[in-house]
Length: 143
Image (cartoon, rainbow, N blue to C red; front, side, top):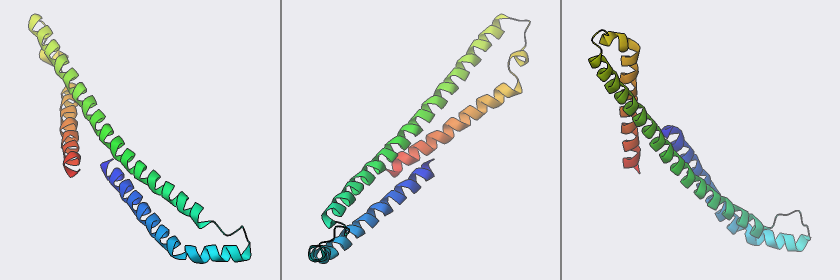
């Protein structure tokens, strides 16, 4: 997801740069267009002032989108980390409760309670949490 966010931010930056270039080009040609418009009396020639206003609005919108994209990406990472932490805590609590139950019941074996799937799930959650934490910290450092 981080790479998609970075790609989107890169695309938005390129769009912003392209818009800036278009504004500069319009400013160069605006005098000629206004003159032609006045001389011809034609209304089908776009009004450069309105075009510049639209381009400025687009620049502002692109900047806002970039900020929102970054914010959403950060929030998403934090939520994923919180969910994984919560799941790991829940598994840990269940393990403790099952250990207490097992300690009080001499007729049940630990193998009856904990199977390979449970152990695999516990390891997988811990690995996912560690992976997400590393990615989350790297994205914070990169900012």
